[in-house]
Image (tube, rainbow, N blue to C red; front, side, top):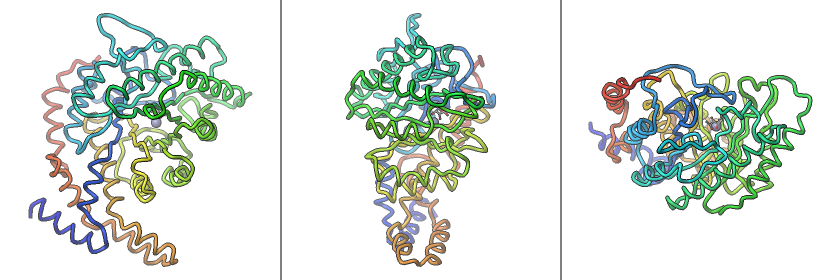
Amino acid sequence: MNIRDRYEMARDIYASIGVDTDAVLEKLGKVRISMHCWQGDDVRGFDQDGPLTGGIQATGNYPGRAGTPEELMADIDMALSLIPGRHKLNLHASYAIFENGEFVDRDRLEPRHFRRWVEYAKARGTGLDFNPTFFSHPKANPFTLSSPDEEIRRFWIDHGKACIRIAEYFADELGMPCCLNIWIPDGYKDIPADRYSPRARYKDSLDQILSVGYDRRKVLISLESKVFGIGLESYTVGSAEFCIKYAAEKGLLYLMDNGHFHPTEMVSDKIASMLLFDEKIALHVTRPVRWDSDHVVLLDDETREIAKEIVRCNALDRVMLALDFFDASINRVAAWVTGMRNMQKALLYALLTPHEKLRKLQDEGRFTELMVLQEELKLYPFGDVWNYFCDMNGLPGREDWLEKVKEYERDVLSRRKQA
Ligand code: RNT
Ligand code: ZN
């Protein structure tokens, strides 16, 4: 039986529980996910040679890491060519491209240092999102926007301002809003003597950054919280409460990364509460394994639950969806494709769920039926709908895409000289 026949059978089965698979596929095809550029080079960037700092870590040394803008762009192309739909590319400021021997530090970055990324995005119809880079830099030790050293703090405030201008440039050039996410690594390994002042300085720094003024329809600024980092186990300046309150006060988006909470705290459970109060929220979907390890996103329970929350709150246009992982132990292009496809699969699964029916069972207290139906839905012919979606987009379904990545590894990645 071919892909189309299998889809038609699946369509009938879903129709019997009131789900219109054709409408679902149309919806799914329109969802843009922001794909992070930093999976391609283990978060190194182009503006410095030092190690990755900030309490995050990419472990592994799989051959073929992108070392230049050209290599990274080629790898992103390879990944995008195997991911259905049109998406956004998420850049960090450390991926500035300097030409003709020029170099400027992060406080002096300008839109022109990202011109080639804009050309890249335009040629491919992808949007661009952006992030100031408050780590992997001699002035991030790890204090940046909360630093007690006024000169250091000034440097990072200027970096934040520069990034807003660059985000505005992206939005103007691409005719699509640009999400700008602020995350700082500032924190303490051991019990601090003062929890208040660093947060007061962070607050003041953010006030100064936002004082540049920008068009809020073009640039959506989000604030990402985190409960701990490596070497920052006892205290982070940008805690959840800090970020939620600051974002609420200033009308920014609160960004939840599902690796940034206590291990039994679930981001999927937080989405509805945030959506009740905020027009838009932002997510970094990742996979924490025992810690904020940033493993590749799988089609696991939490990813599916996150997708279900977004879909049943009818919030596909209110949740800015971005991925955030960096695994250096496997083929990096395959990591991207796997993570992006899994996010799409989770959304597809959520869209194929008869939410109204389930809601009714919940409201009527019919919890046995609710459990049974939710469990049986797991074995509905979801894969047949997914494979048809890939086929519709001219792409191989199932695991067949991996052959292309293997060819690319053989012809391109394995020939790279490793720095
Ligand atoms: C770190 C945060 C942050 C970074 C990226 C590179 O814990 O999740 O989002 O991973 O900005
Ligand atoms: Zn993140």
